[in-house]
Image 1 (tube, each protein chain N blue to C red):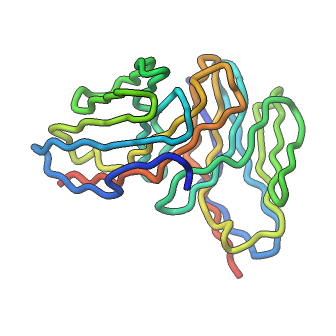
Image 2: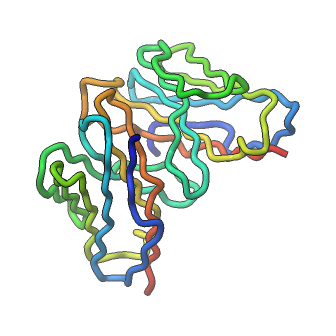
Image 3: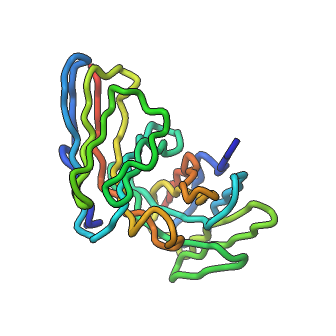
Length: 116
Length: 109
């Protein structure tokens, strides 16, 4: 139990579907992150929220849309995805984005996404 | 550009010692992290180094040389449950984590 919960654990969707990934953290952290993890590739940072404000968007296609209603919840809305978007999507949280260098990020178990 | 290099895969024997190396080139340095990730599970934090030298935590130790852009994770008295991927990540000058692709460690009896 890492304190970060992601749902669903697995998702299969067609390219024309719309779905959302959910992340919730119970650690009292102020920063939350979405990562994409593909086989044999480094973790790719997608979005960062610090105190509910988006601070990073690493050139992510607009078919991925994040939402952070409060410091404990983070969503990733998906629409019109492509087969190359199939991957493990990981959510993480940390005390805050900077200033606490030795505060590690805590990860959820991820959502395994498959695009048909 | 920023780059983290670590071996793709390593094999070791139960009870033995293994060293997983990580070299990095980043824009600034605000610490280096090691994570363990079992298949289908979340990455979990193992260690953090920001000053040169060795940090020991039970069977696991992590070493850092900032002048060489080099770190290693040392695992002693290997157990079958240590079979996992080990991820090296460096925090750059913008406090963003730059990740390596991970080293898959296979432990054989």
